[in-house]
Length: 244
Image 1 (cartoon, rainbow, N blue to C red):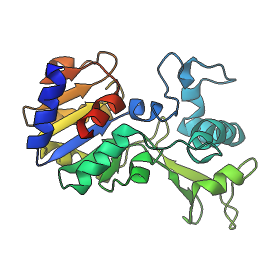
Image 2: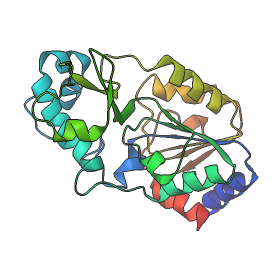
Image 3: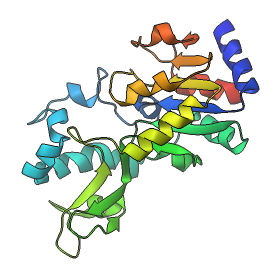
């Protein structure tokens, strides 16, 4: 296909490629997203998922929060059948090792980019792999929460909170600034697996100053008219083909 060949050429010519991705990057590894037909928002719970994963709910209903968090966010990533990086993660890690890719800006919290070998990853919404005590600040791995019962607590007695951005919380300003700088300096910006509907993350692509903005997504986005190249396909399928 002509679009795919154009993308292949642009990637070969790039010296500062940046990737911006969302939940669609991880669904190909078996991790459910939120907004698709089979996503968490379309499943039935005692409370809406966006309510459960909110700052207020975490503090007012911590046991319900952690029950949902363990089952829906931790189990798919570090459980017995843990998800593995797919072709998209692997392609991006390879480009970074080759010195071509300069950054990955992700809305995902699963750490699959790092598992694939990527290091320059800007996690806009935090990571399940980092957890800290609200009282003393001590850090814990995700297994501590997965193995715990009820509300996970630090030896000091404080509640352990996942270092993820909940609804009602602000994104980390330093991470935002780093991501914006990486995008601004890119000569090729690949955007994939995201509806570009969650702000302020989606607004970051406005920092791009080049003329090679590529959108790879199964559905339309509000930024389609901004794209210099638009490919309607799964992100793993496309990026995997670029390194095969």
